[in-house]
Image (cartoon, rainbow, N blue to C red):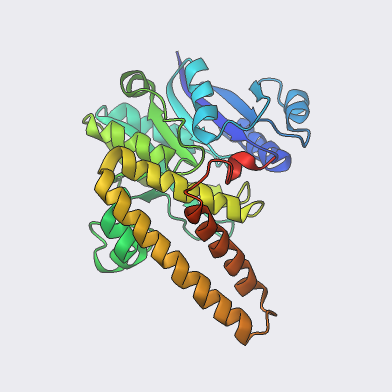
Length: 316
């Protein structure tokens, strides 16, 4: 049996994907592996480029954008390795990264999921592990909780010198044990984008498995290059939708109602604040205008009772 199945989901990011695949095939050598590229209906020549440059990659070409969870599930269902790695197409692989993760998983049989430290291009750290959403994180804010309660809400501000058990690993680079996938099941494809891996880790930990961040293993992640910069408003809508789904599934109906009200009130305040700032600056400040559009669209989405035709699914 192979050691690792890499699953890379892509959508209209040909150049990023090709760079990622180049680094993957050139840097991974001490473990046996297979590579799945799942294309979500790209129209930028991605499929043809992968077929030409990386014929060893197993290509799954979807006719439309199925979302992150559903596309990864396609690779998970086809894999024939001991571990799966969900890998963003905007990552650059370094030598020894996945060999080290495999070694850790082989030595810690109670661990289901691991992930490395994600780095920006300049070498600075990114958030790559996180706590589950809760009423406290939504009311107070995760940033504040990380500042005052770093042990309970760990983050990138602290340097860790040993593996850290955590709630969830970011799906940009996540290794999961195949036997756990067989036991727990695939990701919930009701999540289109955001929090699908958080929900998955929640189910995995509920079944008694452990999730670890491995700080001395590092990989470059060109954060947000694939989606957020292209369609920022639709991306934010998708985040809110996923956040509400997580609450509905895992926290409860009353917390869902409360968090929806809280977010709705915050959006009203943000729209008012951004509108006043736009007036003061005579609508000349681009960042205020962009935020006004974003908050205003999110508010409209709530007023319209969160319609499914708004968000990333509607973006071609």
